[in-house]
Length: 315
Image 1: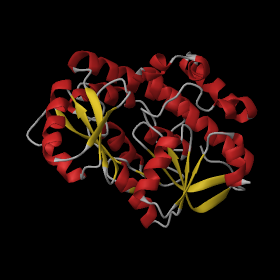
Image 2: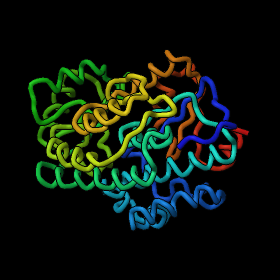
Image 3: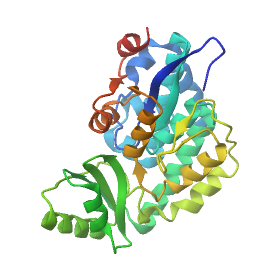
């Protein structure tokens, strides 16, 4: 959420929020322990969900926080709690925001387009929708394809309805997602044609793939009663790569991303074209920071993992 008129907009700076796969037990704890503002947000979201998010986040197991219905509100809570701590303590806001997959929700909450409590409830329901889809049609799998041209990976998926590109993460880091059989077949094709390396992702389902089709109506129903406002800070869609503030675009793309690929390369390229030369990745920050460095190595990129990091960036 944005702050009052005394807030300074950091020209040339974008705030970035991570998605599923980046979660770690203990993420954001340093801020929770040191900043009352961060604790207050966790308390509000705990009450809104009637779920002990802080307990899961700081003392849960890796298996528990990998379940989509937990992962999604936990990442949202961590990102928006640290964001509200930053804005309260340093009186700053970014020129733009963006989020990777689930992080798109956090970015919109930070931009004032949706209330954090509403977003926590929505991401919890979204995770439940995805769990049910995975139980019915999956769970499937997601595999990162490294050191291969994205066009080659896209072509290898052609002709199959059970697998596709889920994430265009960096110039030579693409993720395929779908049924276990479909992903294995595409991997075999790529092994025959390229010298790519592969890494299976630790996620709870085959996100951004045909396996998630059954979740679309479920998420649309969950979103039907959600109020989305004009964003007070421009956001970049991780589906289209377009800069926007229109709530209709947010509603469309938050649903589309369930089965559509995330184009993180386009997100960073759009921000660079808008004059963004400094990126601040919110916790857990390492994954997004690494992707930014691959896409735009000339840009400045900061990671927020501790209050000391925030003081270095904003003080």
